[in-house]
Length: 153
Image (cartoon, rainbow, N blue to C red; front, side, top):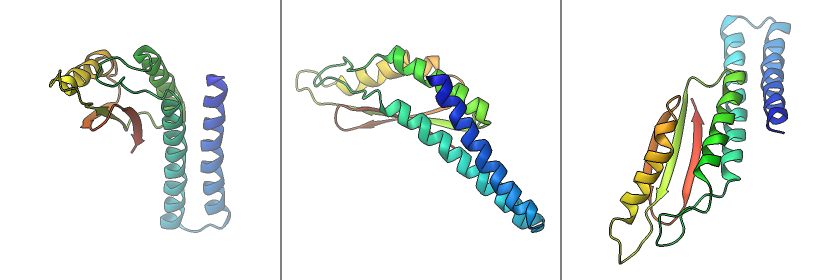
């Protein structure tokens, strides 16, 4: 199923690129306009890949349990999904300039003032250390969510 999704995404990106390129070529619009059309198709393809990766990550519904460092999801499953999506991005030609954004919920526990730091350590040690192919940006946020998204530049 994942391979089928990857193939469909690649076909959509290719179709967008070919349609835009073909339109510019058919009218012989000249270098600047033709390049702008190619750039627009490339940007559209990036957005398609970015949206698909983010959709697949959002489906994991990952969060921390209240007042705990326990997660409602499996970090190995998240890592597996990211690895699969890396392949999608590579096959689409967009894997070289991706930033992984991770919002780590700090939670609140009057009995544990270090809860936020402990959660951040878990994410950095169990996920970040295993993802070396993309840039990484993490941030502490309020609440218990663990939100992982990508931005294709």
